[in-house]
Image (tube, rainbow over all chains, first blue to last red):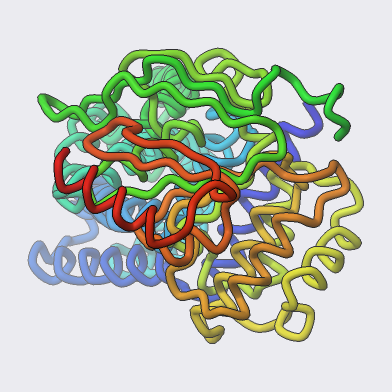
Length: 224
Length: 243
């Protein structure tokens, strides 16, 4: 069990070191998300009244598509120089490999999302730094990273990997995105907690299923 | 590892191994055994199934049919134990270009839970001659140096069995002797090596047993002591041409 967690920590630390050196994932997520927020803000010109209606949707569109870009990079980096084969040669379980990669992806996505929130706050005149909204962001991002890590691994071994990831992945995370948009809207409006709970519960169920099933399938997905 | 500690009577035992990709048959009912301590070199032209064979033995690819046992462990049920007993060097470096040599080795050592990791890294760095470049970023190293780091990575967990997939690519004569030296220096005795290559000259210099793989099957096998290189070239051209 100790070795299991050591493996996960080693994988996460390796990805953190690589990201500090290359900044590949953060740059791709942040640049796309900032551009999306800016363009949609100028195109829709939200008034104080309409902002609370359209802003959560805009935010999650930016998070989703920028997240896909970041997820595509994680295994593309592993594919270079046969590093993915190097990982598969290690005597560790598929579950440990999956959790290591998934936790690193989750961490990068959460950091990028936190960095985007001040820009979102300025552009849409909203206050996103409140516990209920941050909880929604966290729970939705876990589901996103859980499924995304698996499909990023599936996509990396296919010829058209840049297309495969969004085509396979986006339909599957629709329940999370819809739940996140509705729950975010309630949280940003400081609506009643009971209205938000059912959406958070839905996302939590999705997260648990996504993590367990992806971890179990990961070894089969990696090995031909 | 003493001979009696080693699992199985053979280091590698392959029976009726087949691998198909769609309608394409890459390996056809291949039978092969490699005894403990042997250095077997398998020659074959492009598309003969060399890399597929190494991928199956290293648990990266599943076979379609057949039985494979490595270090006494079954390929299907004990793949993790097999990975602990093999070291793989391929034509790709399997190194993260943005990490330094020592960071790559540390990561690999942690994945294999190598005891006394820092000391072991220094030990293998000494064997392959990379002590002076351990802190250098991998991407700035020459191909030859990257290959040495790659060899260090493969022997870091001191595996009794080595699988080499055309490792001579980008290796000069000096690096080739480093490879041979690294393969022979194990605390667990003489390593068993299975190497695939299309280079008759380089493979001949390393192995003590040769085999020829053509269209997914072993068509010739012999000890190098009973042959000379020109005879092997003749046999190779004859068999590969005919197959």
